[in-house]
Image (cartoon, rainbow, N blue to C red; front, side, top):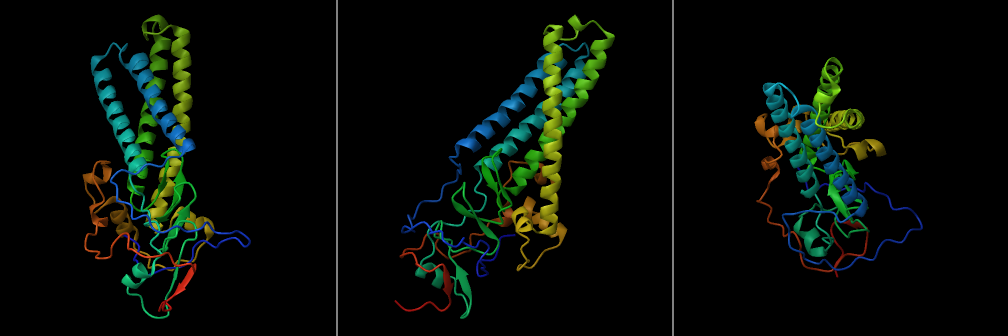
Length: 316
């Protein structure tokens, strides 16, 4: 469920002595369907993630499945592993290229604030870094250079923030990586047992030393991914069920929002009532789409200089 616009509070205190970046007028940029963060570290981490999955694919197929004497074993495990790997990479792509819930840049204008129709006495806060009016539960990401609604954390492995719009895809990514890691480890154990009982020269298309090295590397990769993704998956599910993001827990913020039940929070995060679409990275979060908002995304006007703005606004 999206954070309601009229509720605002300051969730990031600016350090004393630091001068905020000078705000420029809003650029009135056009909304793009594709979202991509141009961060060198994040791009490298994302590429490494894909290469590790490709490496696992190569070892599973050419070391364990293709040389197998059982066609049924190869077909069943090959179909299962490749399907999970495809879903993992698709989830990674959606988590990386989906807007996590960025607040429009430069909307801290008089016209925009007046369009919110806030009550007298309410206070709104402007982010001094991206010149945006900060909704409740929004935090500024120094990598994305935007305020993100319900920001949980910035993950370099998906080169994006995890927020209200892409948390589902991040959860699916960790789940499918966990499953292919577990599947690969089980197949490695069976393959070692098979090779010990049979001739090592016949259990792989590679030489015995190369086969052992590749299987050990796959075991090491699988164990690391298994531990990492199990922790991340559990953390994300707990954050969703408690309706409290990772950064809110880290800062120990007192909840100023009305918490929902665990089941309602899960339905909100995964896009509707329980169904097979929860497991699909190809379905959008339809329950979070709201086309009824008449407020323009990029209202014209000059940026207000004050960081703390009290309603009603002072006349020009």
